[in-house]
Image (cartoon, rainbow, N blue to C red; front, side, top):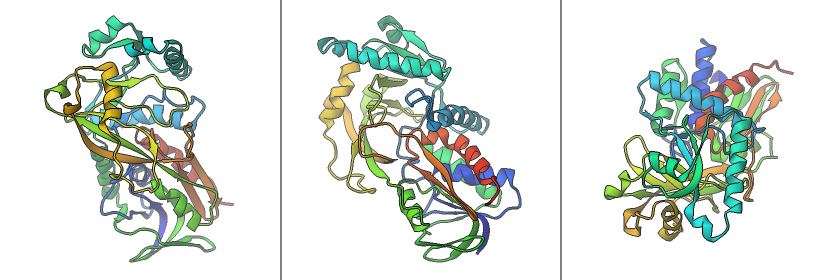
Length: 372
């Protein structure tokens, strides 16, 4: 099958790119190749569903700029379409327990985040313990910041809406069609799947956890993805009503995630998580579950009412990190070949959901660059 653009990967980013290209380039033939039976079944849906402000990232990183822009676009998109969305804001707090260990470090971490927020012109407010109790009565903290423009969405619903709109604009989705091999011709790439061969003038590699393996098939062997798992416990019973906003701890700059936090959802459930740990495989979702005690220890720093019997292991997600070390890295979005076009998206971890629609615009600009 001859196509203008082939997108490998039907996650939230792949679906956002497909929708964007179909909107701005009507009449072009676009296909999405997805190895699973539907869209958004891996990293795209197995997360906290947060549209982030970008405050946790280095302000100079591409991911920070895309998260800030993409969150606003996505929030507007979902409101217009009446897709469930909750503007709960985000609290980032210093625990009362830190008094026992010395306040210096946690306050420095909070101050670093404030500086990042100011550099990015993010609307935030410093809160005293009284201010925190006023908006979250059950949270114990010595101080913190509140970012009002943070939303929680249903990531599966968001991804599915992008998919449905792309499909309505004549994008063809081929499920259960993993790319098995790639060969380069004079003016196209041949993508072989179990059922078809696709000859594409432009290819976007948005394969998430497997983007490094897809890139290698196309001759770009310099990428390596390391799977890091984040697990979630659910707060059950009446205790799920104790917290109604996102509440995060203040963490060091090199922490591999954003920390175990209180994660309310649009369906009124409450989760605790995720942690962040390297795992041996990209599908290592349920083996060697983290004991509840690790989550309980963090939870009770801020909400001692929650007990062990109130927590049940819920699910895990795996993020495609660019390093096996506990350090921050940027997205790689690179046009690695111009004739024909091959564009790699590598290491699209958090805030990938927030960034998706801005990433789609960014990818479109790169694809529109002339060949040569």
